[in-house]
Image 1 (cartoon, one colour):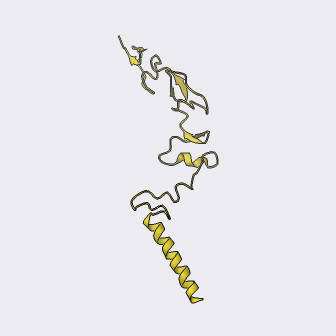
Image 2 (image 1 turned 135 degrees about the vertical axis):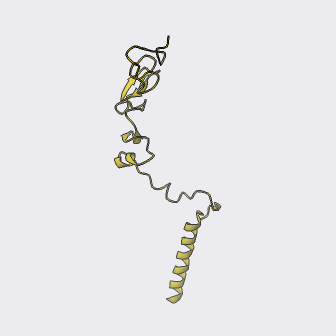
Image 3 (image 1 turned 90 degrees about the horizontal axis):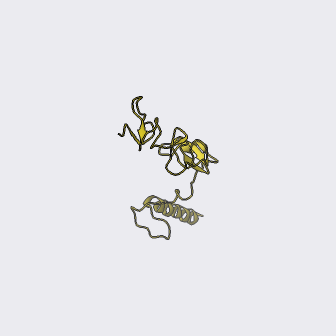
Length: 127
């Protein structure tokens, strides 16, 4: 019985050493490479866990087709999931706009032209 306990303890120590060293069993990966022991297995999807879209580094706080997106700026999901902006338009505040002519979003989102100028070719007061 004592030898069985010793064998079990030895096996546990070897498993711990492999885990800590970052070497995948049988792969022969050298230390310093990324050990994907948990990263390949733990995948949180936003359709089941919507809070993953609120973590730091997420693409946005909304979930469309199991991807985190920002409905205010995403041209493939502008204002709602699946609403794509047509060619030449961008998504600003959840609406598809033409940045070459839009007075509130001239050239880019939020670039508002003043009352004396107009948006031409994406610039306020071009001429």
